[in-house]
Length: 394
Ligand SMILES: [Zn+2]
Image 1: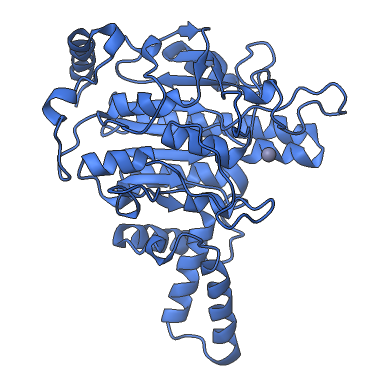
Image 2 (image 1 turned 180 degrees about the vertical axis):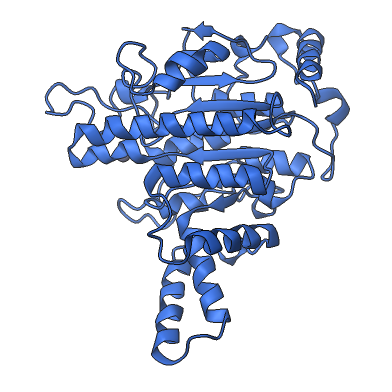
């Protein structure tokens, strides 16, 4: 679809729905869409500028370590400078929680599924945007993708809720080193090239990795397109895990390959490395922000250079949570303990139908992101509680 058609549709939608109602431009034809409706809307790439970042080191033009985002992308984007995570009982300014607020459009209270202290085996309490999308449209599992790091394996299992009539059937597929390792071990065992103690060791390792799945066998991800994706990855990088890029650079590599090979309609990239500042070294934080900035530049260029995505893809960039500004600590942003600035985030979005060079300073909410993605992709996130970010729209 061309950009001009998109624009016309957005504009028509705004006129039809009225600026206040902000009806989705595709709402009418798909109001009663059943599973199997063909998806013709824009692709969406969500970038979690994650691991908890403050406004100061990201969107503050004077102090940013993310110059591409702040000085280049901002010119073609709408920037919400005052997005917030609500201050209310049960809301936690941390990584998995913020990710769940983004995915579900709700501030639910989360605790470990078995109440284990400091364990974060969460289950989304309402459908995720992936479930809404795949329930509304016929989009295969390998085209609704989440790219995750390897430090928080629990996040690989946030990919679906247990909500009635939603759930695992409509999940997002996950690309991460954790899933690659499971794939590679299964392949090594299947190959028949190992036996005896070596085989037993591989089986033990595989069982350990599989045991980290607290959502059940249904998430085993044996989708043929993903198996082929990992086969190609394995041919290129081998099994050692040493040849591939590490940390957030790995996420960029996975996401770029996914765009080329799997052609996702909805892709979420969950960066995380600024969080290494917990260990007490400020340069880990600022350097990680720059690496994410480079990753964003590469993803935007990948989209701009691809006829399938160019002019037909919306980017939404948003942190999972902020960080403290604690003058009593040697590193003031070391943690994110529910302080005022840990609630202070932002969002940047650009693509067809979105105003360019637009800075919106009024307060908006992290849970508004899900409703806004529902608007772009023409699905109704019926249990989400946020509003469509209409100030971003042309
Ligand atoms: Zn953290």
